Image (spheres, one colour):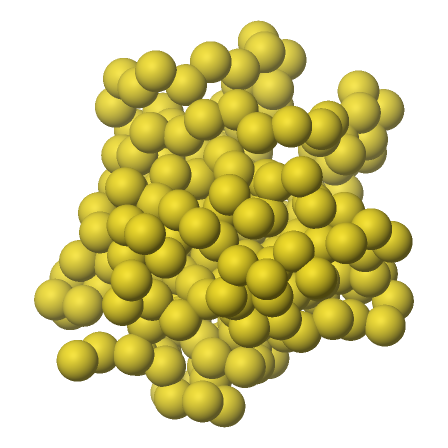
Length: 235
């Protein structure tokens, strides 16, 4: 049996995290589940533990990048064959996990990204968000010469080789688009698979219109700068 870890970053998700963990355990009982409590001020950690997840509680809020990288470090240290990234707000369907991990387990890819836009799905999003994703996709394509339709997706699977990269080099916040460049530049095979996603179970997204503009500027700049860097693991 391959060792597979689901990394679930969560910040103040006490209303959602129980359902997320329960669905993962019910549909994929062979998964180990690690919730990274990113400095929550509510009962996120307690609810996750009550539903049977392992929990690492960070003493301060590190942001999504720091939380996920904590999970990567845990997966690498404990010799997991595959690390799966799943959001703590309920957007990522446990039923779609097999689509993500199969190409990694069979050696077809080092990293898989669950895409809402690779094929037609039921997912609905605002026009402005789709436009932002499209522009990031074009920016990434311009530097790696490969097309990724959903670069902001945080529904991903990584093998041990990929974990070696992201556990040492991962952006602090909004890391998903930038990490594609890092992974491809280091010779890793990164592919997309079409998945269905849902709206978050409850609560509101932390990305406001102002933050969206800041996000676009910061991530686009990071992608361009990252494209100029040398490989982390030179031949």
